Image 1 (cartoon, helix red, strand yellow):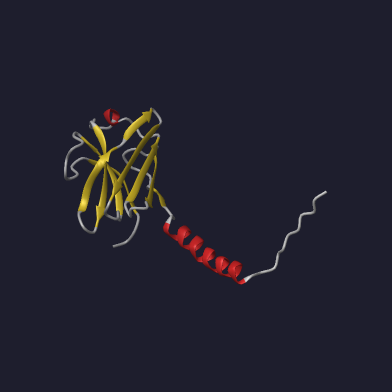
Image 2: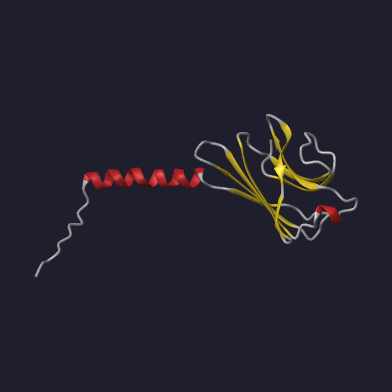
Length: 148
């Protein structure tokens, strides 16, 4: 029969490794933290539950994810519109059209994109065109992620 023996003595190598791992773990937690914000209730579409999640990826781009539940179809708004446009406000570029909310089903819209600029605000408008460069339609809701 074999007897297993374990030596649990602390060595200098183990202590050095332990001292390196803890700061690395803390740094990973700090850099991988996400900002998740809930949009305020919209006066235009009060049943909508909209959240924004912003992360930084390994290449230092900002990953922006929007989920909107119970958001009315744009055709049902008064006046009817064609699409929901997602905008970010940055220090470098002001307000910028970053894409369209896509309908997954009747109850959920989603959106995901990358930005090299840090978003300070995200807002959604109902528009007649998705390719516009300045917002002109009805603002659905806006969330402030960070103060300038």
